[in-house]
Length: 158
Figure 1 (cartoon, rainbow, N blue to C red):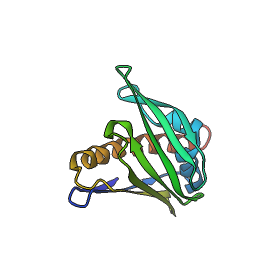
Figure 2 (cartoon, helix red, strand yellow; figure 1 turned 120 degrees about the vertical axis):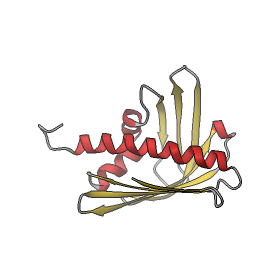
Figure 3 (cartoon, rainbow, N blue to C red; figure 1 turned 30 degrees about the horizontal axis):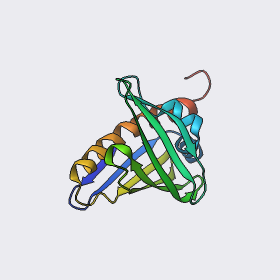
């Protein structure tokens, strides 16, 4: 995984190679049942009640429940939907007073499976939110890669 957090520009860029097809990665990022399965961990938080209207203008949202029982949410709206190569959506977390940023995820086919490239922009002068989100995305894509790689492994090797 390679990541760049540019606090001056308020942008995050992360690249990760995943041993799974672009279709499997795209589905894991957009199917509510799959998202609820992998997004989170017992040590941090779990996500639930995912809504994904996979169309331009469609809603994307979920509830996050932290280990101490506190709840928060994230909402947004799809701007680009190009199965299985790209999704772009606004990102509006409650913990940032629903400040709107933009997430673009491109999925490219490579020899080993997929190259996922995330670009998260629009943090402006809020360098602490940019830094925090950069670290959070690295953790999230670690969960994603583990989930999709295991799911895509041939039977008998899982």
